[in-house]
Length: 407
Figure 1 (spheres, rainbow, N blue to C red):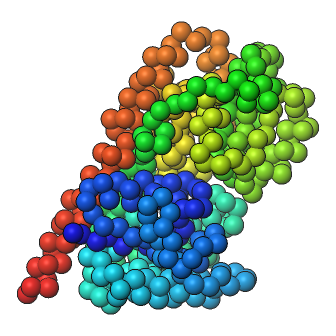
Figure 2 (figure 1 turned 45 degrees about the vertical axis):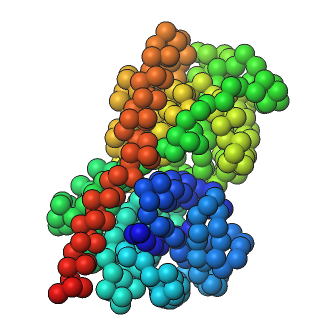
Figure 3 (figure 1 turned 60 degrees about the vertical axis):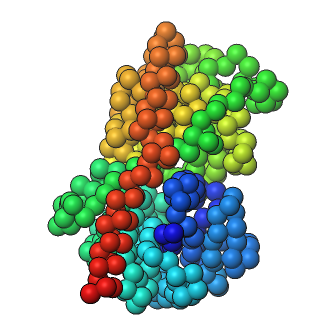
């Protein structure tokens, strides 16, 4: 039975889009009959044992905490620690293939171990680390560190036996760097329909507790990063309420921008129309989806959002919710304007308000659009089908590996 070792930044029980994609991949691969395990780096901050089973998945943890301070020395120590932990799992479990997932530090550690043991090495990129740093406010485009990280990313891609990306934008960027297109496979973001495929009915008590009775509810469920554009969504609310007095905004989640967003909302002339819920347990998320009429994703225009496709709009479609999003490249790969969702110009609160007002003014197409969007997720972005994109990559590398070992 084929054994695949996944090298990861973090995993369950931590909750993030990253860990949920990992969960979906590993569970789907197990369904295919493969044996899978994960090893996480020091950025996995949840307490737990050195070897932990979560939701039926086994993860090995890298010992030690992230060293204080910043800079390359700390990051190289992280690479060394993850490589040591990965090497120990390889010696004990003897996988047939190592599959590292971004950021690039994981690829550097996993590639080192794969070469040491002569194993096939796959590198999967969910976002370029240098662009993610800009989006999270921890880096700046054009800085020396940005340039160096970009060089490391290109080096890791060239050293890998195969590369997997989540969208066309990332593939096009790599091809522009001189990476052969045939080396790159797209395994797009998908939805685990076992988790999101059966929408729950609205909870009247929760709706009343949040003061959403008889409201036209716009919502966002996710992490509060600057690039998500939630400040633009809050800025759009006075204009939306002027046209749709029953409109309310429900914000579920948290993150680096939460305090600033709460302050902005409190100063809004329609503050009573904006509700912050905070973070909620993952098993309760669907209860909040059920209260929302339109999920809004007003991502700002920047390299990260132009290149990378998000997961949340797909989850909303699976939940039978309408989706309205900015027309950045990552959204255009997921949403057909007027068919599976509504697109509006990025960085434009007035355009957000106008698009949402038009949606609420005409509900005649809502059922048809929700059905088309859900069918798109079921047929094209369901993890039960997405996992099959990995099989030909693995099989080719494993055949080549066996031929080399036999020679």
